[in-house]
Length: 293
Ligand SMILES: Nc1ncnc2c1ncn2[C@@H]1O[C@H](COP(=O)(O)OP(=O)(O)OP(=O)(O)O)[C@@H](O)[C@H]1O
Ligand SMILES: [Mg+2]
Image (tube, rainbow, N blue to C red; front, top):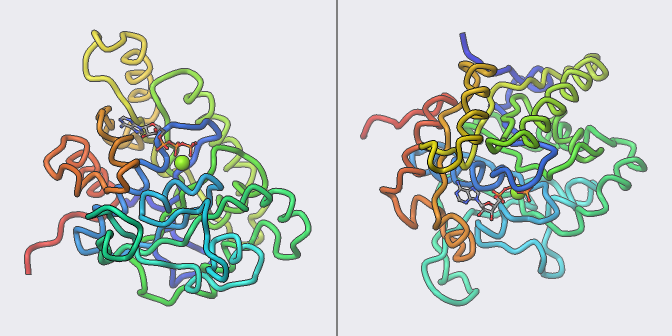
């Protein structure tokens, strides 16, 4: 039996994953962005929606949400109904040279990004005034994505459980709860799971079937010498989450450097263990390597 939920609110949609935790800096963007890149390298078509005001997924994709040129549509315009999703969508890129013109980047074929925007900082209050309110993304996906256009959609979420996050939750079919091996993030995971249960109940009449499908532990430790406490928490997570726990993601010192350089990890070092782990995660999510043509 698949662990994935089916998108009851729109049968034509592929799985819509959301990487979430109310705790910050747990690796939501690092995992989400690189898993999408590696899915594209495997030949899948993916849409990454950058809904975080920090727009880290966009920055890593070669588009800076802090400096959006006049007239360019972003996720914020989609949220406010000023633009359609395809208008705010750009190809993901990885940096191949210095500078900011198009020749400095290589398009990653198969991966599209809905551009993030620092103005999403106003989203929680704006959503209380918008008649579509918390359903803005669910409606945009339902009405503005064509059948068969993507193999999966991934929402990069902010670290909060505010109104914006609830709206992202309602658009997702499968939540991946991201954590680090410490108590703070484990508590955040439990709070999120409870919030999802509550949302499913409150919005059941709107076809919401969002479920926690997977737990993911980032910056996991291999040896007790790296910190015995982390290993205790990892074991606790393995026992608690069982099959729902994705392969543990280890630390790699070059992750922040690759982000800074706007280079996806699979391009930075295709043989790095963390790249192999993300491929194993893709297998578990149901997107295995395709046989060579
Ligand atoms: N596996 C890893 N190894 C080393 N550093 C990592 C790893 N994963 C993430 N980092 C670093 O940890 C920091 C937080 O990661 P990331 O931005 O992916 O987390 P996040 O949950 O998206 O954060 P936020 O809540 O701010 O959106 C970043 O500086 C990132 O480069
Ligand atoms: Mg992030």
